[in-house]
Length: 215
Image (tube, rainbow, N blue to C red):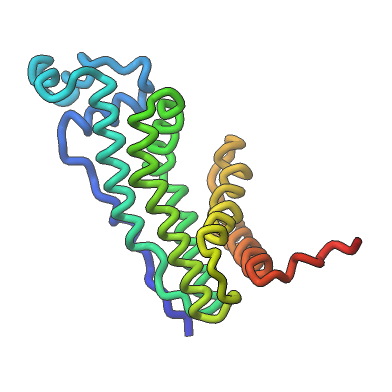
């Protein structure tokens, strides 16, 4: 019997601050460089003096937005990694995780941050501290459960296996779809991809692939 926790896909919280809501909408539609304080204030039904009481400039607002949104998404990730007891529950949790990463709001946020974080150290640090760190924790939790369930051999190198899991299931799927301008995988295609990658991860984690290629 499969025993796993279904991830409620509506658990991602919504922004409640009007200026941050407006900033997100303008950033999504125009990007950081083209976004203006005036547009954000009009959309938020706020005045420029009110804006500048809270934020030094547009960059400070965007930094606050990234910090806030990263914390929100990291909290939603706490719901991931259900009770993995067998291969099927591992596949199901992995599919839920990848489906989460394919959400339009998650993809949009990652795209916004990726573009600006290249030259903004504050944004890059907020993103790493909250969201990237949480992804790593979730993957380590999955690896730990795989060890407890007996699906992979015990090891002290859980962080390394967690990175491998993230690469095989998330990073590769991004290269195959999103990064290539294609629509995220769904349905049977998603099922087949996740099953193949989960089995590959289990094989590599257990050392079955070391001698797969004949000398």
